[in-house]
Amino acid sequence: MNKKKGLTNFTSRMIINVLGIPAILLLIHAGGPSFAVFIGLVAVLGQIEFYNLMQMKGFQPWSIGGLGAGIVWIMISYYSPMLLYPMMMLIFLLFLAIVLFKKIENTTVNTAVTFLGFLYLPFMLSILIMLRELPRQFNGYYPDGSKLVMLIFASIWICDSLAYVFGKWLGKTKIAPDISPGKTWAGCIAGLIGAIITVTIFYHLGWKPEFLNYRDMLVIGVIAGIFGQAGDFIESAFKRDVGVKDSSSLLMGHGGILDRFDSFLFAPGFVYLYLLFFM
Amino acid sequence: MNKKKGLTNFTSRMIINVLGIPAILLLIHAGGPSFAVFIGLVAVLGQIEFYNLMQMKGFQPWSIGGLGAGIVWIMISYYSPMLLYPMMMLIFLLFLAIVLFKKIENTTVNTAVTFLGFLYLPFMLSILIMLRELPRQFNGYYPDGSKLVMLIFASIWICDSLAYVFGKWLGKTKIAPDISPGKTWAGCIAGLIGAIITVTIFYHLGWKPEFLNYRDMLVIGVIAGIFGQAGDFIESAFKRDVGVKDSSSLLMGHGGILDRFDSFLFAPGFVYLYLLFFM
Picture (tube, rainbow over the protein chains, first blue to last red):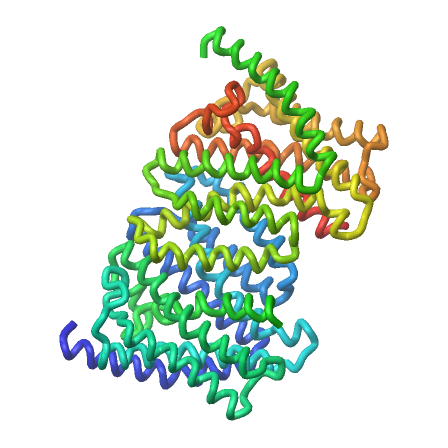
């Protein structure tokens, strides 16, 4: 990468951050259909990128089917999350049934790849909607869901930024150069510390969901710090497999939707499981 | 196929039926861990066949991971089905995380194929365990679950047998010769009628779960008759994709586990959804 391209990237990154971060925080605050539609858009765009990557690799995912299932999934996760498990069953059954009539070449692998795109994006992202709407389902204090999701977003953003800056500054030992050449242990540890500091600041400012104590928030910080970065690696593994650097050029310096939201595909699931099993 | 091979197949089919059908009915009757272990075995053997098929096609599914997830899934569907949805999430997350460290070639497609095997076998078969244990979960009359599952098995077996016999005898028009060359419309309709007659006989003999009326049983018969046969097609589509006739030779004239249980991969899910949404 030459210096000029680096600078342009930096500028466009700044523009997207300055516009994007407050917009996302507002959407989280609003909750309800606005946030669900936002997550749905991220899921659909990410899924399209994922299927494009698979096409580059020579597969023919059934994009319409995968995207249709994704949209239905996002709607159900908002309107009636209790139905998600049976819906997973129905979607998978219908999927297999329809595959029959498509008579595509290499049926099995194309079905497998289509379904992976569904699981990787709408399935994973719908967890953010469920976390946002959690207090509504249980008749709690609705803004608590907003605080919970903002905590996750803030921890991941700070983690990513510190990992980037400290990785450039101090980073020597690469974690896994063949998957993600930019990732260093120094950056990774700085990111984790950043996420822990973020939840601590939230706690001391009193900006916390009622139902969480400091220990819970610390766990969320650690989840964001570790599994947020693991999400980066997963996406890098997919991209490396296809042999591209960015998932698309939709967001200029940020690469594509997948590049920008990869950390959010992975960490929220662990937060959800923590809340489910330990609260 | 020559005459001799046909006869041998017929004999071994008979032996397996004479031993297999009463054994399965006993296992359904017993319920509890016995039935769950039986279903678990079918799932594991089927999943191994599925992964072998995929290897024949040139992929490298991560069999240990897929089978491990399958066994955990079967156990949870028996011990605490309420946790299945979060478990799906956890399994998928761990799966993606571990894939990172495996550094396999063609990561994405091998992950996709491994996960498809998990969904196609343990995920689908676990529904039979849930149906068998349903009355226990709701403090109902435990033998009702047995009657329900026997109804499904009997309808599918009669459906398959009539479809086979009438298909050979009257079958002229093939349904989809390029997927499953043996399937004819005459066989298919005979199978559906067979399933409907089966549930009607069960009803008139009073051998029915308390919570079902005749209309419900009719719906189950139609589901078994249609989606049981659709299950055959799905499996044929997978095999045709790989270019083999039998999924393995484990059960001699019956082909493999997948060949024998393909109808049970598909119909129980629709029965479950019917009971959930209409009862």
